[in-house]
Length: 426
Ligand code: ATP
Ligand code: MG
Image 1 (tube, rainbow, N blue to C red):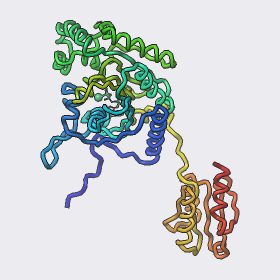
Image 2 (image 1 turned 30 degrees about the vertical axis):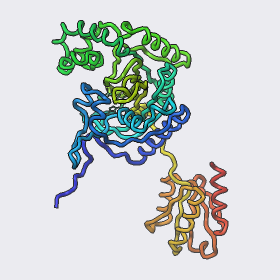
Image 3 (image 1 turned 60 degrees about the vertical axis):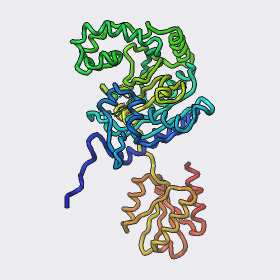
Image 4 (image 1 turned 90 degrees about the vertical axis):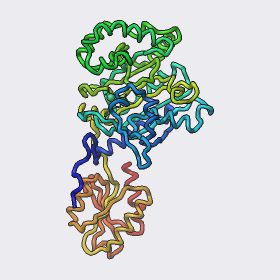
């Protein structure tokens, strides 16, 4: 018999305690903020028909061209693991007839995404995103709120030194003129571009601006900003977004090179950058996608959203030494000493859990000393010692772990006694 592979697949990883509690904490912050901003949760499948992503992300993007996990199921239907959240959310928005209902619709999601990329620090093949999508309003106020939700999230996590990079990339009315201008400027210098920019220059010249290669950065150093080519509606939107950000006190940096990797963006695009992550420093990115719902077969409904890379955010916290101190896992530990029936401990444990306390006990028949050590390690505030002599008289010893103080309490009023003591310290 062959042995099972002993390691997780390259680019994937396990999250164990205590790291998993940091994840719960960060996800809790995301949920709380979404409630405050009135975004509701949507859960979509982690795989979709391949065409959802081809259509929703764009055939000329890195994601669709080279990063997707594509497979056929047993009925030979082409499927893909989701590489991002927006396409599936738009698919669901349409499938459930939401464009005809009350708008705007504001969703958030949390969950894993999958991309076949070269794994490195802050870049994995399965990673987690927290994302939001809002449909049905063109108002610049929504752009401001979405960006503000992003910055509020970073602040609540305790990340310091972040920066908002902001740009506009126009719309299908004005972008072709900019695209044309870029092509005129870049074609004569095409030989100085990296191989992938050479191949995408004609199809998607904006993407060359986004390229991280030094050679491409040099070539594009002096190209005009998209801002200079906006139609009057896009220009007004761009001004209003900036005014709104100033009005709510969000600092931002206009970054003309920022065009984002996905084809569906219009007007506002932005990225939040966190320090200490090297070249993987974009922790949250998004923008407006006013044409996407229509592109995916629906009516013309504008949209805007962002996705935050949770792995990178937690990494950034750790690297800034801002990782969270371990939280206590337990309120009460139930120990047994001497010949006390196992069922006695079972009953005490269950009673206390019914009261809502976090309770554990010894399953290994360890010495009292070892049990107290386990209680301490888990951060229990109280340890109940079911000792042979006391138990015979219907009593239990309650030990306050912080002080080592011990009291003897009647079994009949134990739950009440524990609850009083825990509430006192809560
Ligand atoms: P990058 O330029 O780093 O490849 P991207 O433009 O591909 O990012 P998006 O598709 O906008 O990223 O995803 C939003 C966020 O998700 C990113 O800002 C990043 O924090 C996170 N992210 C993207 N790809 C990965 C990955 N492979 N591993 C971990 N996090 C990722
Ligand atoms: Mg990428």
